[in-house]
Length: 238
Image (tube, rainbow, N blue to C red; front, side):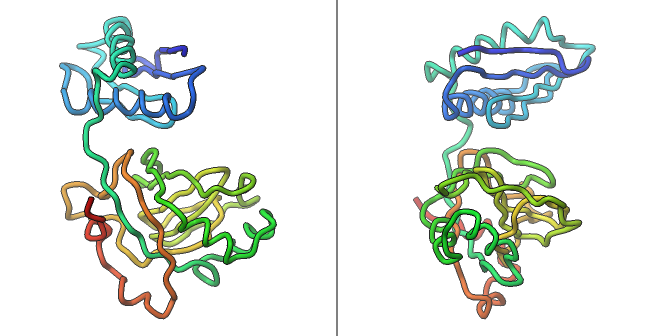
C-alpha cells in the first residue's frame, strides 16, 4: 500500500491511499478523519474523507505540510494495526421509498440497461443494508454502496436542473440519497417522503460514514403516512 501526501494550496493537504483494496483504503482514511475530528490539534481544522483519500485543512500560520506529514503517516500505520479506531458505533436506518413512475422516472431505463425488469431492479435495491461511504454534495448527501447489479449504471447525458429532497439515485456502482432539492446527473429511481435533513437538530443529517441504510419499497398511496417524518426517527435498534 502506498500513502501519498501532497499540498493542496497553502492551508490544506491531501492524503491518498494507493495500491490497497477499496475497503482497506476507505476504512483507513475514515479512521484517520475520525481521529482528527475527535481529538483537536492546535491549528488543524479537521479531516474530510472520501473513498480512498482525505483533505486535511489547517491554519497556515500555525501548521504546515512539513509538520503534519509525519503525523499523518504515523496515523496511517496505526489505523492499519487497529491502534486508531473509528469515532462512533455504526447505526442502522430504514428508509421508505416510492420507486418508479413519477417518483422514479429512470427506473425503466436502468432495468433495460441491466437486462432486468423494473421489479427485479427494486428487489436488488432493497435486498440488503447499504453502507454509507461518505457525505457528498450538496448538503451532506448520503453516498452509499450501490446494489449488486451486473454492470454499472450510466449517468444522464444531460443532468436534470433539480430533483426533489429524498431522491434516491444511481450512477456507476454507487447510490445517493439527496437531502435537498438540487441538480443531478444521476439516474432517479425513487423518492422517499421522509425528511432527510433537520436544520433544528445538532447534526443536519442523522447518518455518518460507516452507518447503514436499508431501503424499503412502499406504495405511493401511503406517501402521506411518512411525509415529514425525520429520518433520525427511523433508526433500527441493534
